Amino acid sequence: MKNKILSFVLALCLVMPCALVFSACGDKEKEPADAAIYVGTATELTTAIADATATDVIKLTANIDLESKITIESKVTINLNGKTLTAVNDIAGDGIFMVIENGELTIEGDGVVNSATQSNDYSMAIWARNGGKVIINGGTFTNVGAKDFEDNGTVANNNELIYASVDGEIIINGGVFVGNTENETYGARFTLNKKDGSNGSIIVKGGTFKEYNPSASLSENPVANFVAEGYKVQSAEVEGATWYTVVAE
Image: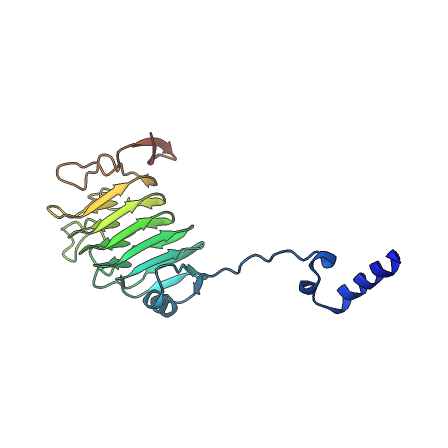
């Protein structure tokens, strides 16, 4: 009798969905699908940012060239997903991402944000202003090769990579930051920069910086310490360059 029952159960598994006979078929609970919003073009990225809810994650599927800034005025999370965002013709000099009032941009994942351009005097990757907030958890940010002199050829550009002004707030928890080390006048001095006299803020709790010490930022007058309490800077020489990494004390 037992053999007949076993034969019946095995036959049932062959002709019916396993979901109907859990114990006999050994069905396992499926992993939830990835709910990210995938984008591979500039148009898809700007549309996703405009339509995203506060809980959505926008994930890149291809390298994207941007002709002008993307304004962030809501809560947005972008996962670089190993891809590169490049400013190719930012004539206005507003950065790749301009985060304004009511905007909160979180950037995570591996990948590159490259704001180097000859189209403007700034070459910013991130600009937080008018109450905008930015949280950087990962990625590589660079503007090496940016335009380092204004059109007259004598006035040096600062080449701010990450910039806060007018109540803008930037929190750096991780990532790699390579300012324009090729700038003949300032080098990478303006990797991080807070507009003088503004209520903007930059708080660093992690990340690695090439030729720029966030605990003694020469971009500020007087020299400023952007490193949060409870954190410290460690330095190392790698192939002739000094790298500064922020870690917990």
